[in-house]
Image 1 (cartoon, helix red, strand yellow):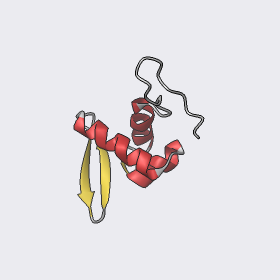
Image 2 (cartoon, one colour; image 1 turned 90 degrees about the vertical axis):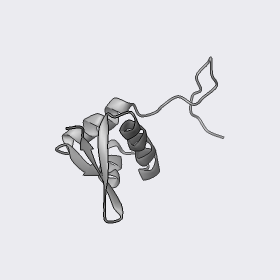
Image 3 (cartoon, rainbow, N blue to C red; image 1 turned 45 degrees about the vertical axis):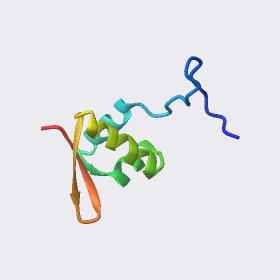
Image 4 (cartoon, rainbow, N blue to C red; image 1 turned 30 degrees about the vertical axis):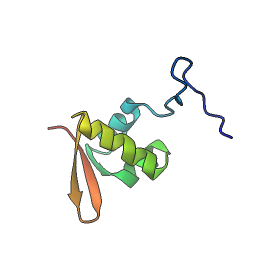
Length: 77
């Protein structure tokens, strides 16, 4: 069983990391970084970072491009 908190009205788990955490990590990494680099900066699981970064991209807050087998995330130009 998990110790994570749930939102009272929806029952969904609360977010441990904010969007701003990911954006700030990307800025701290000179505006361009891989999923793993951002996950390490925030101290979260790589999959957690990937899913949040993917959502930020869909929300047009950051951009991502495939480089080999990785995605390079950038601050929106």
